[in-house]
Length: 103
Ligand code: HEM
Image 1: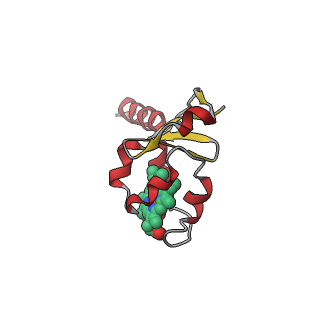
Image 2: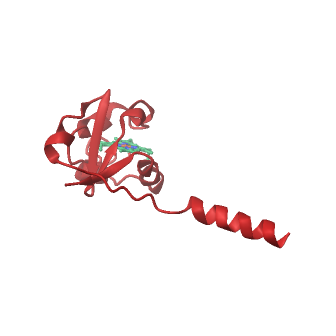
């Protein structure tokens, strides 16, 4: 029973490891990914490929304004919506799409 508990603990610890991306991308390259079928965004110096998420976005097409750009301010202010920062849930969703850092 003890061994089982220990293994469960190790498994859970493994699941919470931060995802570390070593890749870096230039602004020029990021700016090429600026459509609904190929959408990269920068938020706080990290680069995300959110192409798969675009059609699931609860805020609809407003997310497309960010494709290919530094979207930090858009993400934090939602000028086309509530003018508030995104929720913790939105921030956690972002992690799934991390590509790397801005060069
Ligand atoms: C960068 C451009 C983006 C813009 C302009 C934008 C805008 C919006 C707007 C207008 C809403 C409707 C609710 C409201 O106005 O309060 C919304 C909701 C939401 N967005 Fe975005 N969004 C962007 C990027 C993202 C990204 C990258 C994610 C996650 C990967 C995301 C996740 C969500 C979620 C989960 C909601 C539901 C409300 C919340 O949890 O905050 N959005 N967004």
